[in-house]
Length: 492
Image 1 (cartoon, rainbow, N blue to C red):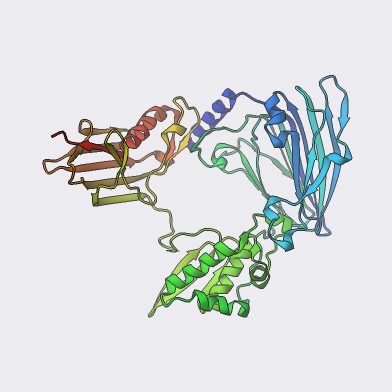
Image 2 (cartoon, helix red, strand yellow):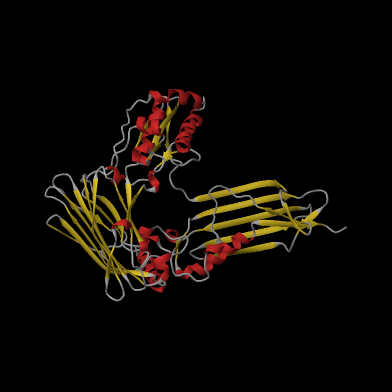
């Protein structure tokens, strides 16, 4: 916990150091769950534009995008205007409110009714204040929202209110921040007001946002996971399953998974817009499109139709394969391909790569009779771009702990005879709290290039602090500096 507070402090310092293009005077979100099974969602923002970039480069400053589903939602714009620097108020004209199909709903007919209301703000100039207030009345009373309080520009005040009818309860939590951001719960109403929030960090290899910024999760306790029907037959898919058939059961379920990934369009639509409901496997199969929950339901149904034991949740599929009396469960994703892993193999493990190989030279000419070969990489190997690591950094950095050891014997071409360019490399050191590195590259008496590389990263919680950053950055630079081997012909 102490280390987590260090990260939070670093985040605050980093936020203070960034120039701001705009600032929110106010963000207010209210969720009122009604006793008739409906809910009212109100959102208000008042944002001051300080720089030209906030007006021209950021679409979310000059425009606002409101997702809603007319089948279950009624959208009402309460206020929309711009207060100019001289104090005059310019209302948003009707023709600046545009409904369009969200990009996530394309290529799927049954979701073509969902809309994105674009509010094009007008009269934008330096130091103007954009005000927007709207309400969505939703015919669904399931509340499940995650709200990150820090935004891409500072927030002077963020207000959140949740109200539920008697008999319901409110669950509200901000993990990782203790009692620093504490709301009040009274008479079925939860309120939280936070002031002076820094803008989010613009940097690479950051820890998850919920570790850096207060992130509020609110719920009224009702299940928000779309229901999946795990006993639905799908005879319409019999011909397809015959085409995909393989006697190797693991290859067979992989082929079925690959079909769903490749041929069923993925529509990334928030479950709240669909009243937390999933389509049937038949609907998804016949339309070749669906949300993550839809595709999970379809994949599980296809596996069952093929004779396997399979069940689905709204996020993944579990399939059981049998070898005699021994069973093994496998997890499959309907939106990602790759090796199908058992539930045991799929558990996160520390990286541990050990390679010992003889390599035939496989380089390319780079001019001046020089040739260069890039050392092979392995799946899951350390992959961090030194160019993305600035010389000075205050934000914490996340890295995966693990160990990698490589030994390559590179056999050079026989004619003409080549030799290694440059002096042999012998680099090794360790940094307490970070790890160690060892690199040796040399040509032996038989004309074979021997490469030995080892990298060990062992950082508490996988977080590099500002104090550790300089040493870690140098380690990354050194590790990536010796990924290629250069040779040239020997002089006669």
